[in-house]
Length: 77
Image (cartoon, rainbow, N blue to C red):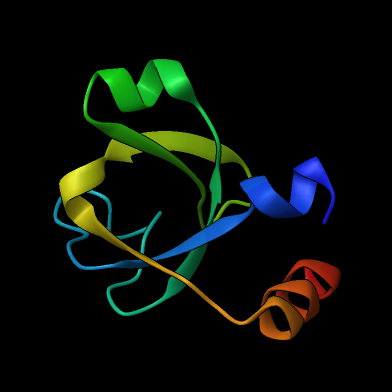
């Protein structure tokens, strides 16, 4: 498994208050590894704009997906 695939994660949005144009509750978002953001309680995700931004980690629940599903989602994006 490559380093990139090991670092790839997804999270489902639980709260979009104040960010209704950027996040959809119940939607799966790609998580971009960011140790600096994580150290401050944030998670960096690719939002509805297609760009990655840091949001409070409390807005998301990380999910582990089977490798084949994760690969298909990454290829589709």
